[in-house]
Image 1 (cartoon, rainbow, N blue to C red):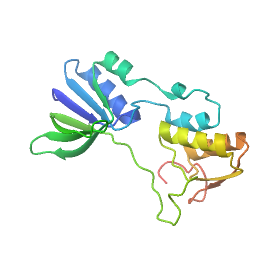
Image 2 (image 1 turned 135 degrees about the vertical axis):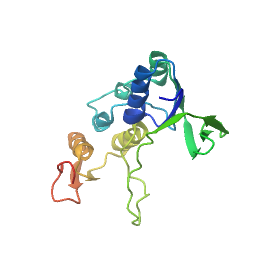
Image 3 (image 1 turned 60 degrees about the vertical axis):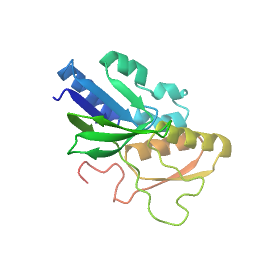
Amino acid sequence: MGRRLLIIGGVAGGATAAARARRIDEHAEIILFERGEYISFANCGLPYFIGDVIEQRDSLLVTTPETFSTRYNIDIRIFHEVTSIDRELRQVTVRDLTTGQAYREPYDRIILSPGAEPVKPKIPGIDEPGIFNLRSIPDSENIKTFVDTVRPRDAVVVGGGFIGIEMAENLVERGVNTTIVEMLDQVMPPPGL
């Protein structure tokens, strides 16, 4: 492994890669950039936080940036977004989202783990209030606040994978009539479909 490793993105992929890299090389300089606040949380717990099964948001946290940094001797930079990679100069451009300032960081190796953005169909009304994505802790807080304050009678969950089914289960437990919409011919499709 190179002596200076940059990891772009935290959560399951990036934080796991950072811990593994530290075990492989005790002396490497490792920097993890995460554009959000959280570097490691229980994704599958998000619906249960909305459903009040998990009562405290902090119970979703697997570790904090401070604890992870201390344990693995890794430079954790939350609220930092990598905006470009210059492979020729072996540098990345990073924007500090709290200050807006951009700077460059050299690297020997990079691990890309930026996560994914939900696919939002281009249909009228997709950005209206009451339509949510569930991918992060802030997403779950927004949905929970909506359910707590608006107390919707009905909901539609688009996607019948693990998270979609868990979301539907927790909405039903909260007293919301819930329908799952899945484009495949079954929910929980087998791997590879």
